[in-house]
Length: 232
Image 1 (cartoon, rainbow, N blue to C red):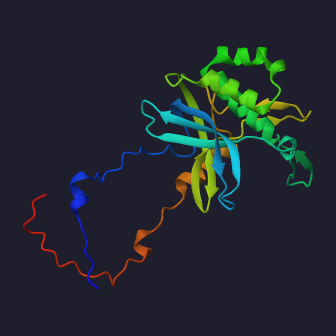
Image 2: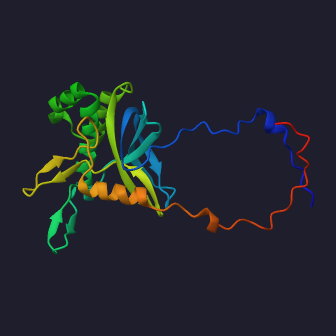
Image 3: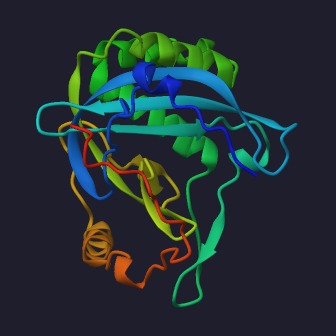
């Protein structure tokens, strides 16, 4: 069967992507916060399920070229308030901050770095905040219109389906007394821990895909179009 291919759209079609590159894992960048909004995501396994998130976007400035975006899931269940328990190499149990604590510290660290006066206003009104949505609304209000404020952002890596993508680090930890404390990922005082430095080294030394071993298609039909008379 002969296919009737049409190339009439060539004149009006752009064949160059206008999307920017992404910021890479395990680096510290100069950035502006270019988006923060409360929205919803559809479930990948269950398309009828929706999950509330705070969508963030940071854009690199100066020598930091690229964009980083992340959706932070909004805590909605009792499990989100519980501190998960893990076991160390010696077999001792230890706790980590809850999803709610990480959520709260992540957003408040961003406010602290970008709008310190807004942070103080939120703290002053803390007793009036009764719901997660009220807290989010205050954070969004404090950060909206602040996309000209430059700050430093630390990104680590998250492996999904064998590929390492940039991600925000955990924003807090627990001391031996069970008290939560901040772990800086944004602002002037950001640096990599020894563990993160080891992960950075492993990421940068990972071997790229050997394209010589990737099979091409030897049965691709030959192109009999004579290109010699077309000037480009």
